[in-house]
Image (cartoon, rainbow over all chains, first blue to last red; front, side, top):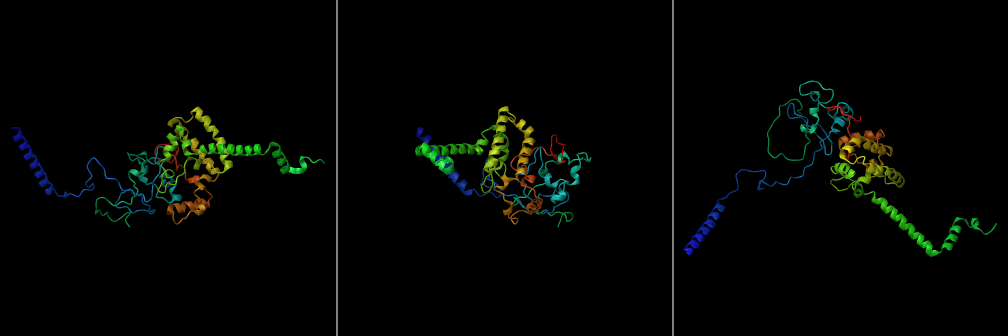
Length: 153
Length: 202
């Protein structure tokens, strides 16, 4: 009885080894191309290092209403309760001397469309809409063509 | 005229004094001088280190934390400007003057004038203006210890930097006129954005 039991176990083990080998042979790389590769879900791929690009010239807009892109490095620029470093050059007062693009008229409207004497509070965090550029390739390709017109070269 | 001191002059008198005290005492005095000056200078320079500065929580929890995110703390080549490089003059005279002024800071340490972040924030504008005035008065000497504008290669600078630098140098402006808040957070500045700031400077 005991021997038969052992024999059964041996058979079972052999079957498992055989089956798993067969499964291994059948396994193919997944057809879906993933960006994360073989990295397990709980882990993260190490990020590459990117640097902010310095164009120092206005980057043309791709579509109407696009917030202009920041063509320079903004590393270390403080946007705090006390100060907004962007305003040092981009405020309406400073722009004529600095040569920077002045803040748009739309930024002087509150959410109800009323004129505000200062730039509206809801426009305080410039980088929510205006973004600097990095030397990174897009992760996913894109064939978007903006309409010709304003801001296009 | 006797054969007294005034005929021999200063060197003669010094010689006579040396003979009187004996060469062993003289050598001892010389050694004591080295030890005293060396010790003074050593302890003096000890107060000119980043480690000393951030041994007070007033510094380590406010200004040092802010500074850690800036280019003078970490950058691509690893060359650093530590607290005393910007805040203590390198020349002996101005350094002593600054150190004597710093005794007032010891007093305020005892008083606890900026011993919480809130107190520090409230005083920030005054502290910053003091330091800006000091740098304005010495033509930003501590910046220029490393950043000599005579040796700046404008071809290596960005277009914005070249324009601004050449205009500012021509006007006789100094580094701190524009480069405020490069190593620490700024005090409130009124910039016509958002709600009006109370206690702000223009």
